[in-house]
Amino acid sequence: MITSNNNIVKGENNRDILLDYEYLESGTPLPVVVFCHGYKGYKDWGAWSLMGSAFAKAGFLFIKFNYSHNGGTVKQPIDFPDLDAFGNNNYSKEVRDTVTVLDWIENSQLPIDSTQINLLGHSRAGGITTIVTAKDNRVSKLITLAAVANYAERFPSGKALEDWKENEVMYIKNGRTKQEMPLFYQFYEDFVQNEEALTILKQAEKIKQPHLILHGENDETVLVKDALAIHKASPNSQLKLIREANHTLGASHPWESSLLPAHLREAVQCMINFLR
Figure 1 (cartoon, one colour):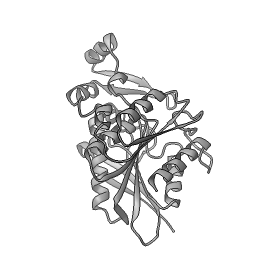
Figure 2 (cartoon, one colour; figure 1 turned 90 degrees about the vertical axis):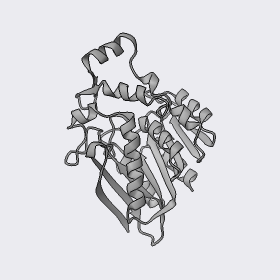
Figure 3 (tube, helix red, strand yellow; figure 1 turned 30 degrees about the horizontal axis):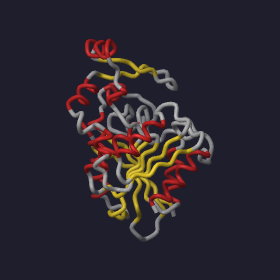
Figure 4 (cartoon, helix red, strand yellow; figure 1 turned 90 degrees about the horizontal axis):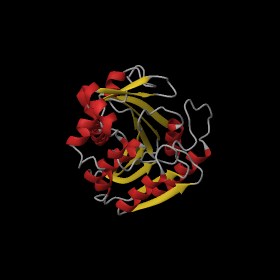
């Protein structure tokens, strides 16, 4: 029997982290996969729930959650009703939220095998999960999917950075929802104050755990060079490039099919093989 449930965990600034899990009851402790969403993402985007079901059917306890400042709320977890929270998000908050979720798992009554807690991060969260894995020995294996390798190079520079500082906010257009999404200058300030801890490749060098790096060859958002850089830095990593796959491995939102897109299905099979 498949068991699934929703929970609320208190994250940064006492904001809610909405979390769900899914597993096939077996009477034995299960290996865990914790999925962390990327920028302008959320746990129920596209085909992520189908991905979770595939892991559950393969014998894993699959957990996914919304970061506390991702712009969603408990009542409206899809899309971005809380743009103020979105604008006040930063990398440090997402690192701490991820650790908070690991704490919750450790203290939960779920049938987990605490020696097999695995992190899976997509895109921006590929960096977050790399940083967390480097400092948290509760993580047994790491999977990064279409992961960013360098946060610093993704900030504006020159006049654009000066304007951001002067205005204290800049806006990013969301092509799908058509929202003008604010990014407050605190995002950059937090990065500068914590740059060493948030430098993904430096943290990747410290990872002792096995690390699978998956990346689409046709990723238009995060280029393959990022995967190569992470692979070079992370000492126990293996790299798998998925032919012709894009940044979301063929998924889009909303995802109406009951089947995973072919590239994501291939990625899930690679991940399951790696974890086993």
